[in-house]
Image (cartoon, rainbow, N blue to C red):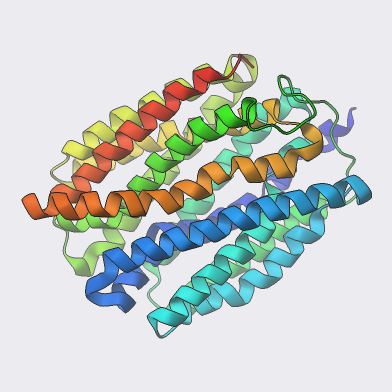
Length: 397
């Protein structure tokens, strides 16, 4: 039996449940809700700048942690202490985030949380190529994708259903630490995977496949964060849900999206390993685009839930294909560095999306009530379509 066959994809990917549990609660519900609570009438503007600042920190930390962890792994064969350091820092940061009594403290807590989460999460992005052989990375990526969706779903449930913010912090931290322990215990002592990237050489070059991945993934994630950042405003202003029910309906709408992503991830595993990964990406993004067109036209929550379910299935399939594609084309010896730079295409859109979309939402709302968030949905659709088309700049893998 090969070394890679000794790796349990479920246990290696378990920590992604904890990571996404935190982000599902924070980015989809709590960041907006607490901004509205603490920033009052300036909520849209202050939220936009806070989301952008946090994403900028995430970008810097992911790259720095990736470079350092690659160097440590080359010398010692292990990068696990990065995960541990991040976990230790997250505990006080997340607690402060939920208990901060003023907007200034809330800002400081969120920025510390972004730093801590990316100290752990940045190097962890390389866990599949570190331990799983190339021919099984689509399968392993489906676990990562499914766990991402499950973590997001549970995080949304926690943030939407529990009203005592102290209990929210505890309900997020316990599984966060627990899933870290599962992954860390399993990976301890395992030999690294063999194999090299299929199309990239041993050097990390932005002009090569990494550049094409960054461009395509960046546009797709720009669409995702455009939608995510303004989903609460869509529910409030376009679907006319009362503010007292805003957290509930925003949470359940995104919960529908994340739960639907699980079967999407599972179904995509085998085609991603067997066929051209570019096709898997294209089909998944086309599914999301159809769903966003439906959402943009929705006049009630029923249609919005249907659109969220379709979009979630497409997103789950995309995440599976996306992980497998990246691990196939990026250089093995610099994988965490490459993944850190690759994740700029996740972090940078978090900076751009609110800054670009907030003025559009404000301008459109001035023309018609609720038009602004609908414009954000249509903008997200366009970003998904262009990003999906750009994947064909890569060679077949």
